[in-house]
Image (cartoon, rainbow, N blue to C red; front, side, top):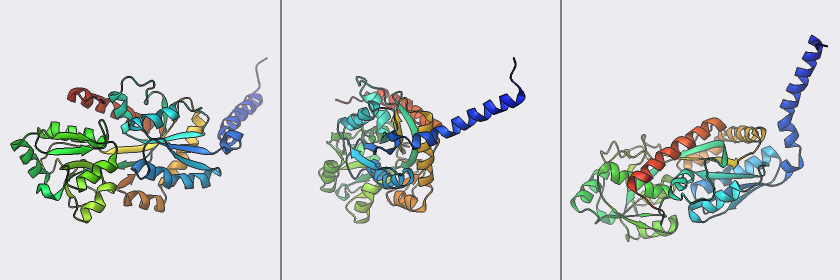
Length: 327
């Protein structure tokens, strides 16, 4: 017997109610009451760590559950990333990361996981920019002067990075490629030691995030030569982009965002996405981000996933073309 219109209406209504109740049911489950771990694959004080520690307490309030920030450092971020890849897809573990994630994918082809395929994009949180800076003793006041000096004496000028394959390193490789110059790379084990030697004049130049470089620029201990973006930044409105300075064509804006283990149910991903985007609209969060040189920028899970995939392809091409190796 064919079902009546009333029966069909009842069945449809029940189905819609069950779909709408899915996030609510999960939010009331035992899994949702366990502490939410935000895994940061880099050291405290980095831009990623600042994002996690700014949003973590606010997520805890909105979700009514404990949120713990855990720094799992090592192997250029691969240790912390793999911890989330291997975590249960139950909404109890999220990764807070940066575009180093996709750089590592190309630099370490022997990894036992694929960060693009084995993680689920939850939401972008912000954009960050890198500055090309130098020690005052070099005498360079503009990016054009640095380029001229590098062309006159190839390899004499050196630069620091926190390690091979970091955004700082790959940004300089892009600068060298597009400005047609050669600078000698001195890789360090982390940002701290690299900045220490840069401030001491042991190395000449470096790409640094705005929040790291700005205090030293204002104190006169570093000189800002240009910004590696297609737009200037409000914190340094008079600093030209490298393209404006006719010093290569470098747009290395860094995205930051949240990821979940592959297989995390869509309703959980969407719940976190909504909460994160709500927080990003808050005036206090925006002020905290901007003060650290980051521009708040939310997204849908789908838009963030597409951004990650595009960036993975872009950096894979650069790494291959430049012959960059992680060892």
